[in-house]
Image 1 (cartoon, rainbow, N blue to C red):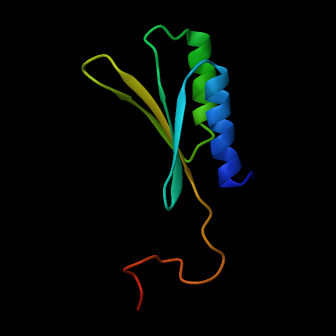
Image 2: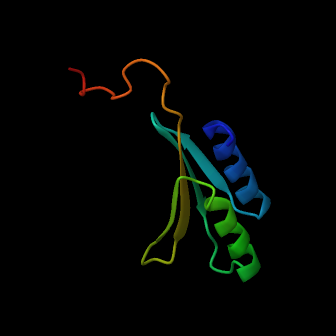
Length: 92
């Protein structure tokens, strides 16, 4: 399995390759990738887009009442192998 950074970059690159403009944002525990989806996206392209986001840890589509659609995907970052992996606020 590729490293989380590589997976996130690959998802963004593949979405860009089908014509979507992507935004990638780094967070403490994950990387998010978003893309605006045009109304007239061919079914063939939708299949490829779904294939791409299915490789993420989570994905979805946010549709607004104004007709906007944002596709999103999340790739979790690797958990440290040593140390306190419980995070802040969970120390003994």
